[in-house]
Picture 1 (cartoon, rainbow, N blue to C red):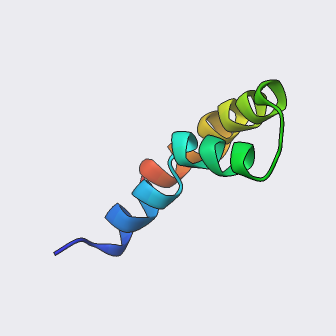
Picture 2 (cartoon, rainbow, N blue to C red):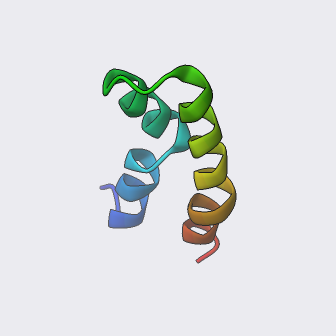
Length: 49
């Protein structure tokens, strides 16, 4: 059974975020920069617990 942490880790993955941003019409460059910042500042913090 998947834990809540596993499901959030999957859903908040930077690659998933990038794909969602692209689907919403954000260009590749800005989406990539946003996902990079997301990974550095938010995603790693969430995984460190």
